[in-house]
Length: 300
Image (cartoon, one colour):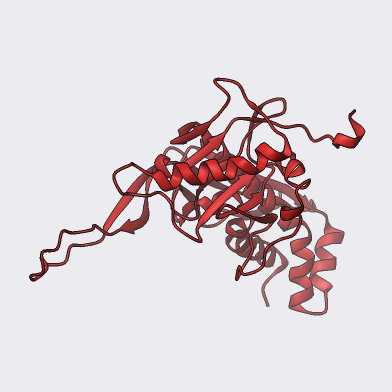
C-alpha cells in the first residue's frame, strides 16, 4: 500500500487533472491543452479545432481532398501558482489509520480540493481578462451600459445578430448549440426579474455549472471571474464553446514532500504553470455594463 506521503501527492495530482478542467467556466470557451514539462516563459502550441473550406462545384469531379485547415495558437506560459503546506502528525495519522483506501483519499481531498479550486479560479480569471481582445464590443459610446432587466435580455439578441453576421461575406461566427454567454452574478440579478429566465431550460444533455437558462441561442452561465476592472463595471463574454480561446496548463502539480528537520511535521510543496490567449478574437464578444448587486425593492 502506498505511504501517506505518496497518497497525498497522487491524490493532489489526480484531483488536479480531474477537476481543473471541470471547474473552469470561462474556460469552457477555450481549447485547453494540458502539457507536460512546461515552465514559465515557454511558448507552447495549442492546436485549435479545424475548419473545412467550401469549394465551387460545376457538376464535374471534385478536386483532390484538402487536409482540414487547423490553426495552431501560440500561447505564452507566463503565470504560475504554488501550494506549500505542513501536515500535522495527527492529521497524517488519521489518514494512515483510515479503514479503507476510499476513506483515506476522502480525507486527503478535504484539503487538496481547496488548492485545486483556487488554481482553477486563477486560470478562469486569466481567461476572463481576455475581454480586451473581443472582436464584437457593445457599449454606450465609451461608457458602460446601465443594466435593467429589459436591456439585460436584449443584449443577447444583439450579440446573436453580430455573431450571425460574421465577416459579412458568408462566413458566420455562429454555431448552433455551441454558443455561450458568461455573465457575472450582478448581471444575473437583472435576468432573475424575467419570468422566462427564472428556470433552466431542458433539452441539454449536460448543463454547465451555474447555468441560468437559454436566450437567443446562448447558454447563459454565471461566473465570478468575469473581468471587473472598476467598481460595478463588468465585461460579460460571448463566444463559441471550445473554439474561441486557447490555453496551456501543466498537466500535474509538481508535488513533493519533505521533512525540514527530524521530528518535524511533513511538508508538501508543488506548483503548476499556465498561459492563455485569444486566437479567435472574431469569435469573442463583450459588453461594457454597469450592474450593482442590489435588490431593487430595497433600493428605492
